Image (cartoon, rainbow, N blue to C red; front, side):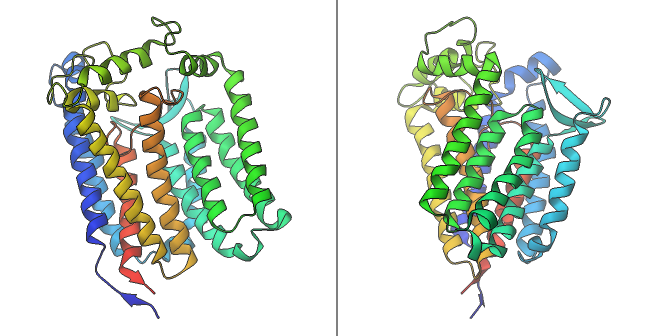
Length: 365
């Protein structure tokens, strides 16, 4: 029997806490770049609040009030919209190229990264698809093969941009979701082999990707070239010590650390609030994951279970891949830290995902 409850207060509190901590740390990490580019120290944090946090909170409220079964009907149309937006990044005058990658769409002063919406739509579509195929998941022709074909289509759009970091996170989430839906050990091995071969080919296809792997294996490699970012990040993390230099007192963010408000923000966090503070953030993500899985287990149907699990994995995998990469525990990927890195569309859609999970938490068997 399905019953209605209040929204999960623990998950809601963890979400708001992560947003609050993220905005607090972004205000410090972005201060120098704001001054250099706009002669105003709070440009980026205000932009994040106006185009990320506030729209995200609106989306959180709306998605929390929307019955989550609505998203099963909307999943395929939303995926088509997401793929259409991914095509737009390659159209001159609409798509923006930055650092050799075509990942953004611009409308006047507002820019948007379609891959963020693609992640949202693909997880939603995959949850709906897995529910409809749950009895056939163990079959190669009805389960694994169509899953690999769907994933391959999605992957091709990200490879063309190129955005291998987002590709890795999204495919890891998809493979994990397929696994928990009832995959056999043989299928899991096949997925690992396919994923490993794909990442290996992509790594050697571009010199900068291969250099990132070499730098991961040898952090001292080319410290003024390909190893510069990780070297500066490790200096920042080491300088923070146990308790940190203090809020806004990072030195590495001043023209030393590349992307201090983007994928390197965790290094700034570790420098300013130290090992204790940065581990507190790691623990917050762990609690966020545990509570999300708790909600997934109490969902009244498979779609709710898969949707909650998929969104939780997407957010947490991205967070830990970022933290591992910037700490030297994995190759640099260039993906942002969930809830904390600069990017309005990413924050807004993450909050929309949290809202959907809150709606699922209201309905239990």
